Structure formats: structure tokens, C-alpha cells
Image (cartoon, rainbow, N blue to C red):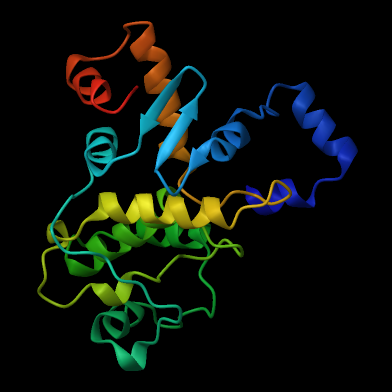
Length: 210
């Protein structure tokens, strides 16, 4: 979607806005998030983005082990990367998330490779999207054979991706960070103020809103 939107000319973008898909709300959210304090400024209210809040919103693991990334993921230097790439008979040089989704939907297994596939797809869509729409594998070397996925702190990793992408973002560029996190927090605040929110999440928000 990001590549498509970037390729549109001004007349095409205007046409998209005219049918109601041109909201600037998401850009406003990015501009009003401070990665240094991890606070989302929503006007009269501020939301502290914490691991606890991310866990309650998305239900992802909040383990004790930090996810460490590498810039270049090489199969010849990490056994899990080699094992993951080995599932493809002819692995493409660049695997897009659309290709990967189609591949996953055709698989019936539920073992370790399936878990890695799900994690890669999830973190690409909700953590950090790449500029060429390929699968984000920077965190894959952190996964060692035999280690439980739940021991890793996915909540901290999502916030770290948010911080990094906001710091490097320009208003002329697509935002490649975890936009759903900001949007959900904003919607939760709106529902919180209008009391349309379940008790558990409202309880968490009271500790994160000032």
C-alpha cells in the first residue's frame, strides 16, 4: 500500500481523498509522538506508551529477553536463519509480505518454522515495514534453536521500532513504523473519554494518561 500511494500523482491522490481515504489523522499521531519520552500528545491528554500498554492492546509476549537485531541477515552465520530459508526450494532474493502471506496460507504444518513465519509476518506488518515491502528479518538471528518465543520482549521491541521510525521520519515519506499502535492508542483514548471501553483496558489507560 505504501508503494502504491507513493506512486500516485497529485490528481490521483486528490481522487483518493475525495472518497474519504485521505485522513491526515495518522500523520498527526506520528508528529505528536515523542520518542525520547515515549509520550503520545493528544491535545489535552498525553498517553505514555509502555510495555504494559502494548501488551494489553496486542496481547504479545513481554518476556525478559531483549530482541537484538542485525542489519544483514545471513544464513551462513546463523543456524535459525539457515533453517528458515531452507523451507523454500528456490528462495527468492526478496520475499514480499504478499508473497509470504500466500505461502503461509498454503502451509499445513504448525511446528517451529510455522511459528517463525508467523512472527516474521506479524513483526513486518505491526512492527517495522521495509521500504521495498519485503519481509523484515532483522530480528530473526535473536531466535536460537530450542528457545521459547515467549521469553522475548515483543512489547519493548515494538516500542523500539516506533521510536526509531519516528526519529527518522520525514513528512514527505511514508511512515514505516507500527502505526496501528498509535491509532489504537488514540482510539482507546477516545473510547475512554466516552466510557466505551472494557474495564481491563480502561484500568491500564488510567495509569498511562495524564
